[in-house]
Image (cartoon, rainbow, N blue to C red; front, side, top):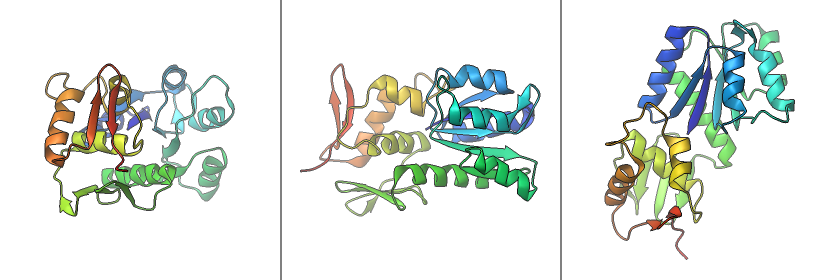
Length: 223
């Protein structure tokens, strides 16, 4: 899942980014509106965390622009993260187009829980995804195949989840990199091919992930 963090507090911004990368999110960061716009004209994000008090403008204006602009790519979901805790501020944020509102200071565990909840809302699933005999519990981040638990690393889970969102569809290597990796990922031990190899091995036989040479990968849907 690719996330944009728009936050002017350098320490908080890096803590959020590094924490989310440990959870296998692909993360881009900006310290203001201008930098965020540079990202948003070129990249389709799954989620954006946007602070309101930014040095070169109000994040609320950016949220409004995302709802109306023809040249900005609106993230699937927007979470406002701000110290403004008045009811009117929350109402303004949600009415401007945000999907959720998180008041600072917040625990990192709550941030990740909010992001998972926003992702589930988009997917139109209750709390699980079933593809053949694979079941993914989104709330618990639990994976089972034929009822047997499958222990996955955060990155392996992220790859499986991205494929499971698109069962039977071909997903290119570039698309996987765009949504599951970022510039900080280890290009050798953490490459998509290495992760997919380990994921296949852990899921067992018959192999549910097909490689289509020159095209990409597909999580098969049994007929």
